[in-house]
Image (cartoon, rainbow, N blue to C red; front, side):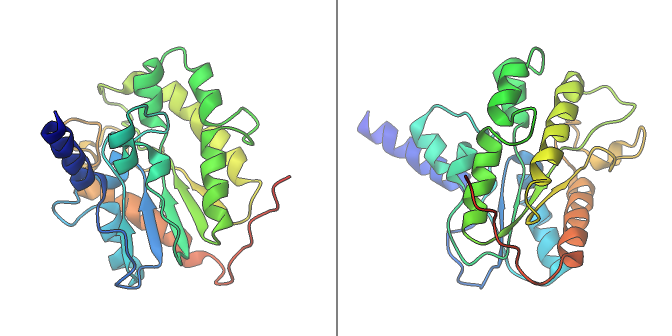
Length: 237
């Protein structure tokens, strides 16, 4: 049993992090999130790789496939399957992040999701796990880009039924970002042209290399256009 638990922990640690937790290469951008950001890492074509190429700066990628906010298992959660465990304090200029889709898919089947949505982010954009996580990151001084999810317009997919819950999550995240000038919500719902399959992998859920490139380029454009002066986090009351 001890040997099994040790192997489980080692596997979780190996899969939980895109790169070691360090800033040895003077990385100033941290990426945390789920498979939308982690896809295509093996081919060095993940969103973090695109950001490095577009911005000419080091990026530390800690995104993890299947990560979510509400993950009960302690070992795999600590290794990154719990989104809030991925962040590490550092001298970050930006933290690029996403998340919430797996909670909607596995927590409520993307059906009757009002309760899960409220736990993620309340209707007014002020409360819930996502605003709390973003506020924690902002307290460290980094600015935040929160990325929305890709859609598959005009195509049938295994997660097509998640569209309405995803749209409501986007709406609430827009409100959340409006309370802090150091937080930008970047939608991806309009990135994929109608009936264009090239932005997704064969499963029509995860982004292809082209999809990751489009996501990374859109985020890089936001970072590139932002004022160079850091924006202080608002005082929480």
